[in-house]
Amino acid sequence: MYLKLDDKKTLRYKIQADRDSIPLKERLKKTKIIADKLLKLPEYRDCKTLLIYHPFRSELDTTIIIKKAQKQGKKIILPRVCSGGLKLYFIENLKTQLKKGSYGIMEPVISLCNPADICDIDLAIIPGVCFDKALNRIGYGGGFYDRLLPMLPSDVKKIALCFEMQVIDRIYVSCHDVRVDKIITESNVYE
Image (tube, rainbow, N blue to C red; front, side):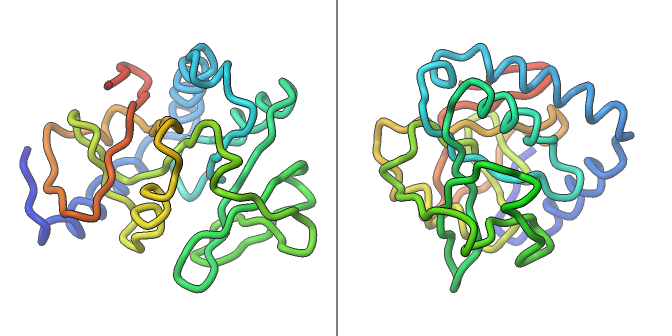
């Protein structure tokens, strides 16, 4: 499937609707498979500080990964939408340091979290609605990660976690779109 820029909105809607239709029990089963694959990667094992996102709507449950990483002594950075961009914060407690923020996404409470710098990140887990086999991504349309990703140090790997049904053959890319280095699904690892 090849999609033009005009089709991104339609694709977002279709993929999100399809993802929403996956029963919760099946989503959790697939999430565990994807999380296990990530946790075995050398990029994950070697990282000390992980940029990751809090799950939104029917995204896979990244809190499984966050809790495991914290038990392993890794530092966790979560983003917060601020003035058209993302600000980064260290998180130690998912229950007490987050509140529902912009777009209904759980975000760090500024007064309870220490700010993080882009240079603190060793590994970045990147969200998206849709990906292709060439490692391109379509986000939710705000461009927040398209602005953040180019600022990451070149040695920081960008890994997307998603369900296999979110990966299509090919999507249209614009000049500001940034590819990820790897996509992990319950069925495949794309590199």
